[in-house]
Length: 283
Image 1 (cartoon, helix red, strand yellow):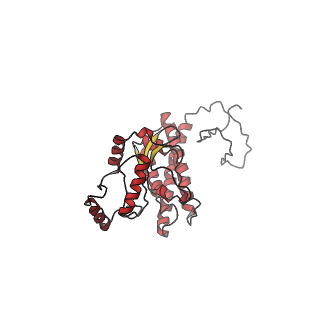
Image 2 (cartoon, rainbow, N blue to C red):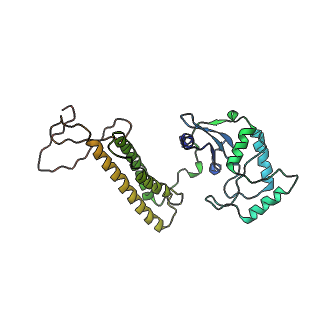
Image 3 (cartoon, rainbow, N blue to C red):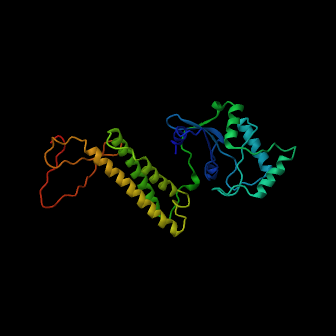
């Protein structure tokens, strides 16, 4: 998502690292160290390792990619992520022993353990980071395009929940600005946590077992209750402050949660035993 650098910086993050873009199977991404810039101009210093997931210690490969990296960036230090698995598998004992062996070979490039933050801080000291290339677009993962799912309901529930909670946030903010209600921070946090939990990459795509989706349905039902209750409560409080005294008959207040004017059909339950005439505020 092209807006992510803005979100990262506003959330206190200065650096971004991912191996995922290495899965692209059509276009080779041109940079390994660069600025990723959002539409608003926010930038985050970004590093893409040469290796992918499940990368083990490969001494000759290390030398090859270090040469490429030095040629492209003039840096002599390169960060390598190693280990097995894409979600916490980490390095095995065998991998760690191989790394220890490389540390003791005096003719080999120096090998040491460190953190991503330490590496970025070293980059900042050793080079003019303002001269790095700038990427002004989304980071598109081609490998995941055009995929199907066996659990379309899960994806439907996810998107409906996102829309519902964003609407709940907007309406709650408006009610708070009108001093009609306190912002329901804790309830919204609970709902968003459930949404994000179910976005885990084995749940949302549809590759989990049946019991996972039974639990997921319960989570989405809880999310709907929270979101709908928040919206109903706050709309009632906002509506009570709308002056409808100049409108004859039964006043109806309609809210548009979008940021632009819209035309849509509004359904209102009414008894069938009467005739009705609909008027706007102009009569």
